[in-house]
Length: 420
Image (tube, rainbow, N blue to C red; front, side, top):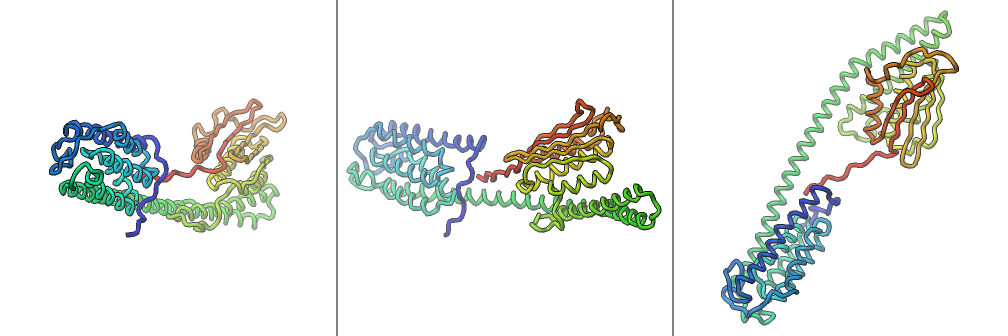
């Protein structure tokens, strides 16, 4: 059978790491304390109960649990906390300490507890061949160590049967647990897939609602403004310019709406599913021109290359600038707006400020900050925090307003889930 089950995953942290280390404690107590008790029970070599001493039929000479034997007994347990990251190395190290223990002293008691855990972990992690080889070595050496080293005249058949049963039961139980864990993981994946399908269906429903409620109205606005511009040759120039701006803006809004609908309908998010790329900072000049066409005095200063930004960060920055300019148009159209974008190695700083032109009075009061009763500031803050950035906005000392956001140039990638 080809071994393709598992590869050591990411280093666990927090509760997962504590749980894996904590599982070693009962194994350590069983192996160390249980073996010491077994040696005390058997009287340093006299035959004890069959679950504590393997020499039931064949007596062995008196032996003592000396410092080397204790070191080997404890050494196997000490390696177990590293079994997740080095399943193969821990398996062979624990096997060596176990076989060495049987060579130093006549084995008895639960001295194979650490080896049992190492075998189960390696099998669970996909090291099937190594587990079988290690189990065979243990089954061959442990019952025959006393005979090979002259501590017993003959191999005890009961010890051979016990060692063989221990190895077989360990592998069978571990495989049963592995199958159960895999089935549970498959059920979780199935539930996650079902949730994604439901979310996709909801996105499609939202897309239909958006199309029915918005796209039709935007199309009528675009059509009627175009007709009015065509028939209004005698209209004042400012009126014609306003109608042209309405026509162009509604056309661009329709394009963006179709793009958003394409994203909502793309349930699985396949590359190339969008009809047009969603707007980013590369569209900033177009945004500035539209604001100027609406009568706003706007200046923009961009430092760095927007192509270095992650897609979500680029889109969030553009939308923050767009919303801030919209607020200037609605609340302070007589003010001068300044857009500053600085793209650094790790952070993107975006600022949109406005201030009164000369000594002209403000045409709209901002006694109530934008967003306290609406969604302007709330939406900008959510876009910033969604990509791991910060956001702040407030009045300036000169009577203007400032919107500032600091975003990471790249969004954090989620860590791989811990399956075991």
